[in-house]
Length: 81
Image (cartoon, rainbow, N blue to C red):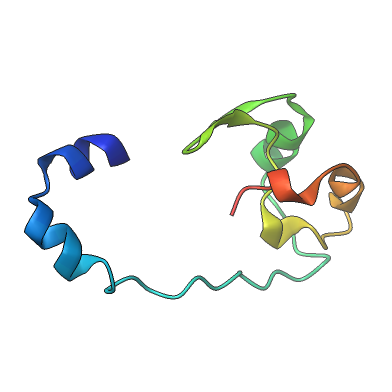
């Protein structure tokens, strides 16, 4: 979807809007917070569809959660932001 928006946005507007982004802030989630059962299912899958393509479901915000921290032993750089 990002490609469609970028292709339809005039180049002068891209320059004006380039500095209007919000700062990225990682959500703080309690390490014992209850999560929906579908979150468990997504972690168990080898790959899920993501904005950047396909890969393991590893949201950075859940890296410290008691239930999911074992999934982050490989490469945290692959985590979803």
